[in-house]
Image 1: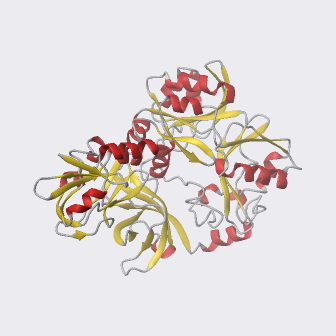
Image 2 (image 1 turned 135 degrees about the horizontal axis):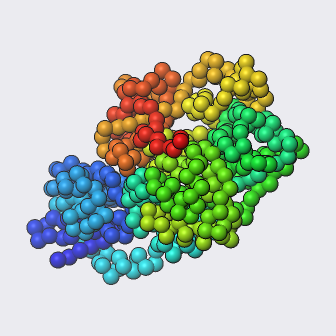
Image 3 (image 1 turned 180 degrees about the horizontal axis):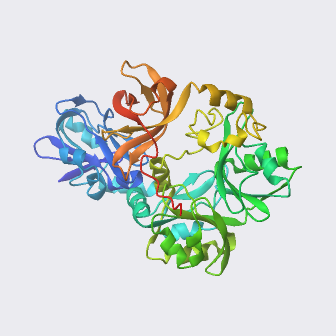
Length: 124
Length: 370
């Protein structure tokens, strides 16, 4: 299972069918604090890499959720909409945000692996 | 940026696992490990300990101190009985608010608490305007702790049962854990509770004695903000500032009759003519509460519009209210839209979030009035 990371503290889990599951990292949820609201994109919507695809809001702040790659939204996490705290309690599992069909899989090469992301956090 | 100041409890906050942020020029705990929601709910259910030592404490003393202070605030200070506390506002010549403050009359002085971010200018203001009429004595060596929540009295009474006799907005001298303290029964959460002024070098000892009580947990500034918002209390620099008058800010309850037109000591404070005119005729805009039935939080800076999309106001504070589990906000709206129940919309990322004007507090106050 391949997991990639972005400088915006999002993760992508690459699936065998050419889609990726996207969420925010443990570091991101810790920095935000208690998540109380998420705004998720519409299924079927297409975005370019770095477009704002959603919003995550904690008690004290609102943050954009960026599209990490070009692609089309195939599914969003309705359970997260109903219980935004999943982004805190299980950010890399039940707290995922959306699934995207990759338009250009080569873009994944520009993203970080876990070692590189951990290094980024260490130097932050 | 200049170096952040620290309170006497700074090392204790770090020991307790606080996340520290800059606030009012100080490095302060925004939350501890349990997080803002849990801290907020704990304060409403039990008791929370807040470090508010960044705030300014000042003594005004001398026979004319009360009358002197009345030249700077539209508030009845002269008639304030000994050990009673009152909310007040420093105004400017335009009737704008320079800061809000708490004043307690003690045996021989007035004990004043002002906001951290304003304290340097407030002290300079006091010294310049009334320094020749009374002594203005800042108390930089005093810490200030707030113990708030329905079980605050139970916890504090274990250190000195005398505190039970205090009622809301009164104060007195109490020895707590062997430390001489000045305690008022007041706070910034809408709950029963106390604010405790103690010598800075004893502050850690006092905080540990309070945290040792089973009801008490440390609470950061994040929950302090959501608690005061649900209580409908203004945050200076956001909900009130030099561009808002006490009438626009819906703080006319703080101006006693004796300081209004026809009263024995009417006017005589900066901007009185503006405030008197607005008291008589109303102001063009007013601070109100807004509540939404949707989930999306509405925050400071959001524009308020009517059904046609015309701009009618601005949100000055807003968050999800953790006890209500609904978004709440304080906003200035044009007076035509200020009646309770008026439907309005807040613009959040170009979406119109439906809200209704509502009375505050959003969560009922639970002060101990005796």
